[in-house]
Structure formats: structure tokens, C-alpha cells
Image (cartoon, rainbow, N blue to C red; front, side, top):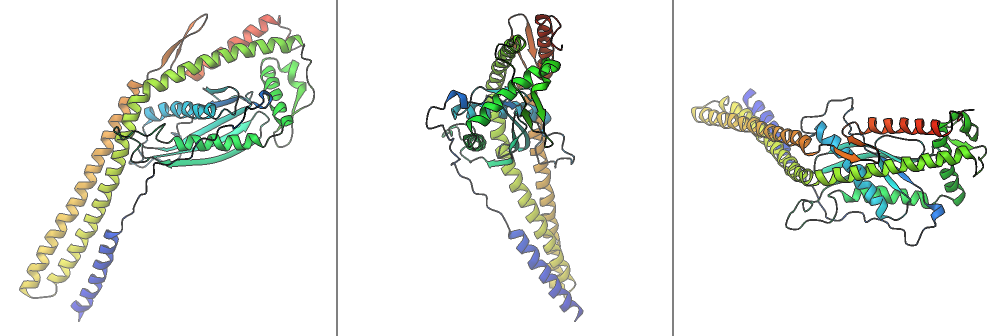
Length: 398
């Protein structure tokens, strides 16, 4: 009676394990992605807003340690933070709905529209980013998470797809921004442009320009007055701002060169990563199934061996041995998956040598733009302040 009850219980457990082993997921892939919305008519110049895209946060400061198969390689993520910003800038420019679209090394408050983002996941198969769009008034247009999976055709050399493997994400961000901007009134857009200019001027001469702006309780900026167009200090600020634009435009050449240089090895990495991710998923599925079936076989073998009788014991021993082999096979597959992860780590490390910084030639100096592009830009802004102080004779804050 005891053995009968035990066999029933074990059989139930065996069936449950086998059902679990048979459960698999099916991933659906498609080559279609959201098309880019383009302005269908010539937009008036007074409705054009300049956009600054801050190179994305690499997403390396997350509180929780990433799982070993999340494929987070610091060197690669830092390169991607620039690549994604440049690719998004290309999409915005192609939409023909904006003024100057520039990638910037750090966030500034004196740009009409600022885009910031964080890389949440990037492994060649899936790209997920968090994006926030804010205007110079301080108004948040939207904060949204975008995610997309690459088609299995994305890295097919025989039939390459047009654009980036995750072009749909960039198009969707661009489309959402364009939709929001199209709802803005001409007065609001004009106000944004003026606020941007005053905030730039205030960063050089707070004493002279503070009185033109106030912040309300919500932190939004409001214009209280406007300086005269022929105000000498404002005219000097406008000249300084043009120099700043020149420097930032020079940075665009750096970013473009950077992306072109990393394009080939990066796409190779993404293609290999895509395959590795799929293989790891399959290996883990097989490892899980083999482990479950192995345990089930062992349990069933023990039940059979305990049922009594020489033939039953012999069959039970065979089942236990077979189950042990399946369990070992499951662990071996996990070890193989671990090897794929280590191979990806080596690929990620090799990217560091492929994405070395570039040297940008300026009018009066040669600037090395390395991992400290932000520091170089801060030094440039300090130099601009010195130039402004010299041109105003130290009277700027009177």
C-alpha cells in the first residue's frame, strides 16, 4: 500500500516535471518597423526649434548587479551612448521638422529642446532606452521607455536591412517629438527661443540678465521683460553664442567620425551578440529540460527500485543512471552557455581599442576629444567666459 501510494505521488511529480520541460516560448520577429514621419510642407523658420541630444547615459549606475547574461560591458556601453545619440540626431534631421540638431556631451539648459536618455538593455537582439524630452522653459514634453527587438534579417549580410537594426526606436522618438512640437503655438515657440537666449546670456552675466527671467513654483521659466535688440551686452552675448555653436558643430564632426569608425566592429559585435543571445536562450532551455527530465527519471527510478522485484530494481537502476546523465548534460549545457558569455566579454573588451577618441582641429588649437569630451567642453565654456569678460571690460555684471 505504501509503495502504491508512493508510485502514484512520484508519477504525478514525474508528469508535472515533464510538462514543465515541454513548455517553451516562441519569439516572433518582423522586418517591419515604424516609419519616420517627415514634415509634409515647408515649415516656417520661426517655428524651428534647435535640439540638443545629450550623449546617452550608459546605464552602468544601476543599483542591482546585472545578471551574468545581461551582456553589459562598460567599454561597449560608453561607445553606444554616443552611437545612439548620433543615430537619433540623424532621424530628427531627416524628419525636416527642426532647426539645428546637435549631439552634446553634457546637459545644458539654454537649448530650445533637450533630449536625455539612458540605455536600459542592449545586446544585439533587444534595445531598450528611457528617453526624456524637455524644453528651455523647463516643461517636460514626455518621459517614455522605448524597446524593440531586431529582426533575424537585421544582420543578414546577403539581405541587409536598410538603416539601423533598431531604426524603429529612433523613428518613434522622432515622431513623438514632432507630434508634440506641432501642437505648440507660435507664441510658445517664440518664447522658448527667447528663453534659450536669455539663459545663455545669464550664464555669462547673471547680474545683467537675471531680471529678465523668473521661475514659478513648478520650476518653469517665465519672461518678465526683454532687453533691447541693440543692447550692446546682448549683442556681445550673441557673438559668443555663435562661437559656442561653432565649437559644438565641430564636435558633430567628432561624433560623426567616432560613429563611422565604430560602425563596422560594432555591427559585427551586435550580429555575434544576437546569435549568442539566441544560443544562450536555447542552451538554457535545453539545460533546464535535461535537468528536469533527469530529476524526473531519477525519481521514477527510485520509485521503480523500491517497488520490489529484481526486474523492477534493475529497471529502476537504469532509470536512475539515465537520469543522472541527463542532469549532468543539463549542467554541461549551462557551462557551455557560460563560455558564450565569456566570449561576449572578450568581444566587448576588444571594442575599447576600436573606439579610440579623435583629435579635432580648431582655429587656434588642437583639442583631443577622448573619454573626457565633457571636460573639454567645460574648458571651452570657461574660455568663452574669459573672452566675454575681456570684450565687456569686466563690466558685464554691473
